[in-house]
Amino acid sequence: MADHSEHVAPAGLYWLVWAILIVATFLTAWVATIDLGPFNTVVALFIATCKASIVVLIFMGVKYTHEKMTKPLLIGAIFWLLLLLVLSLTDYASRYAG
Image (cartoon, rainbow, N blue to C red):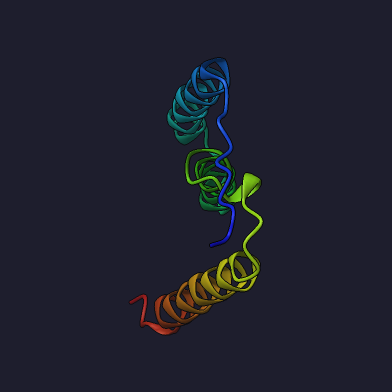
């Protein structure tokens, strides 16, 4: 059988990530009150992407895995997300605004 060694992250790392996610949530709420014009959505999606990346890397353990299929699956998931976002934004942009 293959040797499966588990990476055990220190509890302090999880508390730090939790604090970062809480601060980023408040940052998202604060930025929403500022009128950035069309960049409100861009900034909100950037913050959400950073938060999602932290969750995937630390809480889901992708940062510590040595499995060969993890990277292709992660790339496929990101591609699928981008495809859905582009198609949704294309639909939204093509609707009649009147």
